[in-house]
Image (cartoon, rainbow, N blue to C red):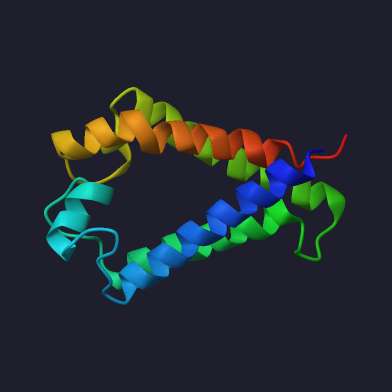
Amino acid sequence: MNPIAGHLTAGVLTGFAGLHVAWGFGASMPATDRRELADLVAGSPELPGPIECFAVAGALAVAAALVADVAPLRRRVRQVGVIGVATALAGRSALGLLGRTGAIVPWTPSDRFTALDRRYYAPLCALLAVGALTTLRT
């Protein structure tokens, strides 16, 4: 178990959860407006709605709690949860690296998004998957 990697991973997941909450409330950061943000983070002309943003935020918050080991769960339940988090992140990474993120969204992502996905988002998901796995106890 690597506590530094686990804390860093949980912190990044928490930060992304916070961003999704802000987007759900209408923020456009780090872009200048919502249209640019939609292309930057979703590869679409419009952002998913607040419900979708809040759902992703909730999933990221649960993932962060599992990775940080702050939820009062039995050891085996947490292990299964962390493996699920790592599997989801690794799958997202693989799709992004292959330029196939469109397989999990109901739109065709823009070329700009696909390039950003391959260069930044997918490798970050891979790192987060590894970071999550480092929190497992043998």
